Amino acid sequence: MTAQLVSRMRGFGTTIFAEITALALETGAVNLGQGFPDTDGPTGMLDRARQAIREGLNQYPPGPGLPVLRDAVAAHRVGRYGLQYDPASEVLITVGATEAISATMLALCEAGDEVVVFEPFYDSYAAAIALAGGVRRPVTLRPVGPGGRFTFDPAQLRAAVTARTRLLLLNSPHNPTGTVLTREELAQVAQVCQEHDLIAITDEVYEHVTYDGADHIPLATFPGMRSRTVSISSAGKTFSATGWKIGWVCAPAELVQAVTTVKQFLTFTASGPFQAAVAYALGSELGWVEQSRISLQQRRDLLADGLAAVGLAVHRPAGTYFINADVRSIGVTDGTAFARALPREAGVAAIPTAVFYDDADAGRPYVRFAFCKRPDVLAEGVDRLVSYAARSSFGSWR
Ligand code: PMP
Ligand code: GLN
Image (cartoon, rainbow, N blue to C red; front, side, top):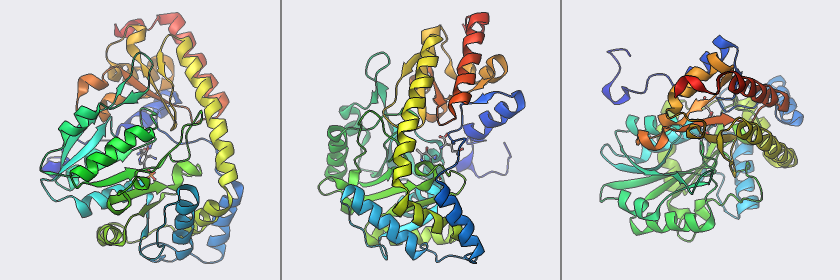
């Protein structure tokens, strides 16, 4: 760690995704760590990006985003959830959800303000809060029984809010636990936001990635919440284009204006041709998205069954790309040591989720496996785990 790094960023080091992907490359492991698909999104969308480049859409798009994309985002939001946003003043296009989260935090969090966040939290949340000089107030998601879904204790949520709390950052469908919060749970969150006059920031990047009939319900649809919610999403997961980094914010004009003020000095704007292609996809490729969802559910089952077959206790997710496995079921206590050794030992890479917790004890036993990979890749990963388990009985970490 360089001595020149500002104190508020010390301790962040290299992201776990970069670390594990590098380890997977070095060891030739099947990479079930970083959550990116290994197949492309809809062909029509890819063609539209090529066409946009040929047509010369290669200079700065407008700061708030191409009008055609803002229109498409607003149409999607109203069509799918009945939430109306004015594309001219209430929609902002960002460089992925990551920029949307950081810009929103920098715009709305005063140094010393507290931010309630559910842990395990996506790693950029902690960094964005730290950059803004905010203070994390974590609420821990825990499994309901062995192999159960992860959820929060409403009393812990209430206890996390103090007079200094200004923001609540929510992610559902949730990375890395795979939980899709229910209407009842969301109603509790909404009530806390209103009682304490909090602004909610919702990370909905997996809005289309839900299984077994689980429904994604935006927090902004709850009574009284639209006016106090900054809703964030992204094309990366919806259209299997994580490298395009097209995200967006939908919120009341005053909040969008605040976020825009920061965003214009982070990147100003980006990726005109990809914006045009995502606008097309939001309007014309939701059928592809549904097919992809069905295929992901099958791949979830393929990997979950494979992990269970080697004795791992699996928390089968209702959404996202990820399965959490509890390594205590194979006699291992430290999921982080396990995940760091697995690529070399077994030829499979996964993410230790303890890094997403402030409460290290709560996260210690969990390892996250991504199933947004081709079935043959998942099968190869499972085969390697099966043969490793047969040869070692997972003996080295006990
Ligand atoms: N939030 C969550 C929960 C994520 O899993 C990711 C990774 N896709 C992001 C935000 C970042 O999204 P983007 O790639 O659009 O910046
Ligand atoms: N969202 C992806 C995941 O959770 C990783 C994104 C990244 O590499 N920063 O795996």
